[in-house]
Image (tube, rainbow, N blue to C red; front, side):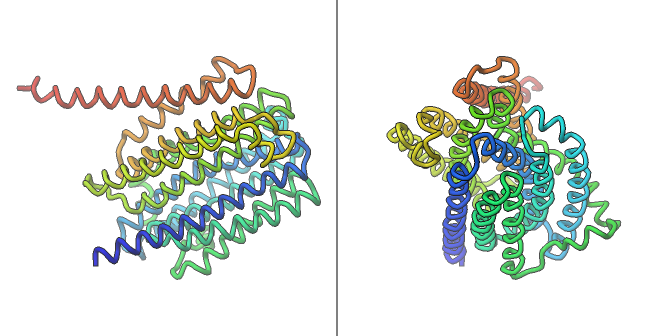
Length: 423
């Protein structure tokens, strides 16, 4: 029986990985296509809006982790009801955030040099469709239904590719962004049909919270808050380079850099698949199983990252030009550094999420150590060009990791010494 479960895990994980790799490929085919449809400035606007949406979606991933936790802890009926409660609260919070975002639209347009105000309206729509995405996929991941999540990934990516290209060709950036929304909605429809079980109902958002639901949210508010803070801080770092580039450099320079950075994000997304395969297998209590899982994940992740970096070094003279077009010639070095940054960030994220599932406060310490210097470094020492920007971010991220290791070491020494002192 144990061997059968292990075989099923590898089969489902492999299928999930293949489907999600296909989805990642389709998602990144989108950007080379858009460089041939939009001018560099408009392409920069598209990448900036997508960067902001990725950061917002990253915050919402905290609730993906919460959904996994609920399924592992409670019977299915209870987990479904509690997931619906979280989805309900989250949608109303997102509606409030959408109003704030629209009020701040003039400031965002000025700071990020975004031409069309409709692009920010599309960002609001992306925020709203992200809610059922993270709740439903987390709920199914908790049930170890990775195949269904993989089907969502591939279907939404294919639909986004089609609709974004067609609509961007017809109406520019804002229409292209609406294609992302349509593709995500289509993927959610596929997910609902293929799930084979009840999913948290969207119609429940129009009802009030029950007494039990309010009690649950109150009892888990600190864990949810910690998850939001940790996931939010780390997700902010994924595309923070694009946001800084859009603010610091000219539209053309920022557009070129945004294309190269988005290309390096493919490595982040592919590596991130390991996280969603691993987290449902992690237990809350300490075990040798957990240690084996995390060691295997880091080994696979390191091998994949080193292989990609080696390929980029060998092909740096022509890789960005081949994939993104003539306007991106000579960007091989930036691609290597941005890829290294994404590798380091995924490694940090993997370990932080592992700590979150185990409900360890050290997850918050890790996220704070790496986020604070990475966010503040370009403000303290403004970079003069995109290469200096990403090098600054990478150095700050590494510094944060060293700081976290030092704190954990000192805590370990303190725990070891304290009992002896007491005696």
